[in-house]
Image (cartoon, rainbow, N blue to C red; front, side, top):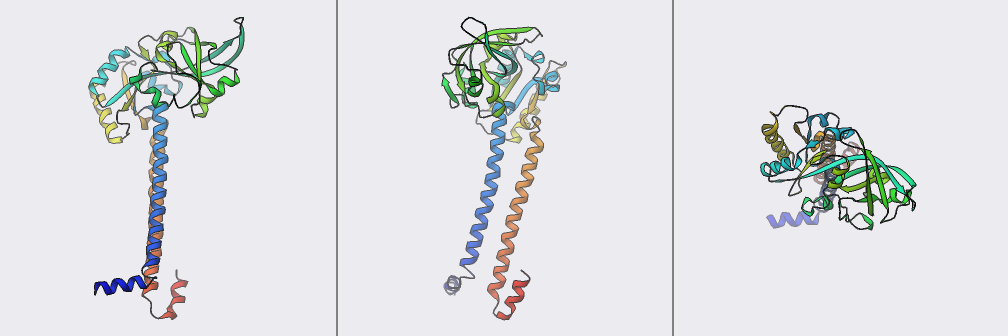
Length: 321
């Protein structure tokens, strides 16, 4: 009997082939759209974490109140000791210092006179320490256009677009004119050892990367950094794990008083990512629901049409959808 019924279904295409095709297309579209949205969401999280937010970020409480300005006068101090403590207390996280700074990049001619100038937005990272993972995290090696990676504290990489605008070649000297941690003017000569494409429009227009040890000496920030970023060693961002890290950090450091006391921020606490990720989740849920609903209605109507034996009712069925 079972085999007889199976043969009946196979021979009647309206009951076998058509529902199979509709279900396959519906499932394909649903999985594709959901996977596409989740992929875009993962790209947003990864890009923000790598270039700006980290999975978690430790800064001072005063810095947190003006984080959009990246005020280095409110930076963390004694970071070597703090980084060692955090590495011991949170072994699943890799901690790395990072400092954002701005200034004027001055390019001299052969006589030492100013040949070109341009405003620069810089990022100081731990380039000389391979275990920091910053070169791979920022894809500096993959984005290198000319030259080589910095091998000393006073060697920098400049965005390729910025270098072409100022007619900078590898091996040229450049003077960074900026503001030090304590408000005074800071000037330091650097050697441009390469140009790089960041893939981020704002940084490609006037960005540069330097090793953090050279910027610490330039900005009078010895043993200091603007931000201390934390990344899970397995590379995966999960909200539950982040919440557990934040709760543990608050228990350890929450009782410390003063504006210079360390505080911690999650990825979703920055760049308005919390509301954006929540919006994407809602949109993806609605789209999946719509695809499933449409597919269900189509299959239901196909089933109704397949059970009709009084062909005069086809017109009524088609009219009502």
